[in-house]
Length: 68
Image 1 (spheres, one colour):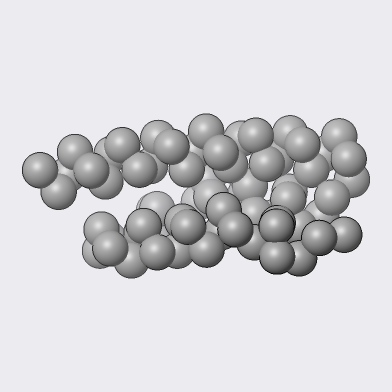
Image 2 (cartoon, rainbow, N blue to C red):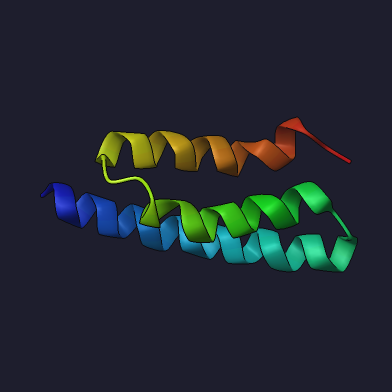
């Protein structure tokens, strides 16, 4: 069950990361671009499911906290 949740969350964060990256490139928003790239990469380095979810939610919220 935990693997299915991880896989689903990886897909969701990858999709949101792609959207952030494209949006950031179009609007020249550095925070959105870096958050998008981080959302692509971070699941490769973190193995704990709860840590993956926590870091993912933080990266998703980052462009809303640090607006340019």
